[in-house]
Image (cartoon, rainbow, N blue to C red; front, top):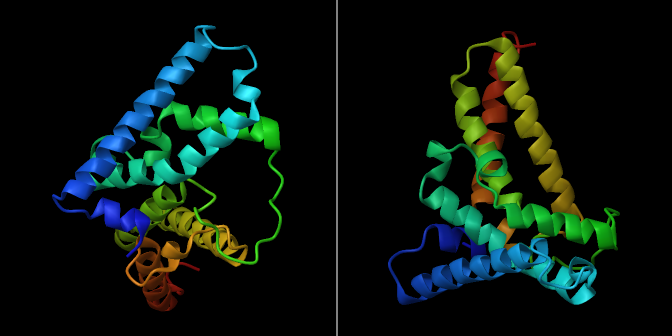
Length: 202
């Protein structure tokens, strides 16, 4: 079990408490920084300076997976809806803009080894949504909805495989008991069962 799942499934420990408090404090720090920028209390080009663009990107890649883990750990997706649409903090969207403005959206240089941090900070939220989609599609009786839900899960599966092939994920994504590994197991099982449904859903 890796970084994301360990935090999501953590018990009551001093280390887990400390990590969570640091997560919260860092979020408050960056929110405060953004408030100052928007109130014109920082240099006008602050958000274009490499030091802060890189720092915000590093923060996002390391901490947003923890925010996602906490969101699903506490069942917020059952109250508000999935993280991508209903739970993502505004600061991360702002950091996306900072990074893309300064670095563009071109594909990075090919990697020879797995990344230290998964390069899509929302990867785990997509895993959670895909796993939930698999649960729902099994119970769906409407053919159109069934096909649409199936397409959504398929798109994520293809996207995740591209990330892995390009080594844009950290190795913990492929850990034996990771949420992604469990998704793959559930997805393969569902695809096997799907063969029996082909006559019903061509």
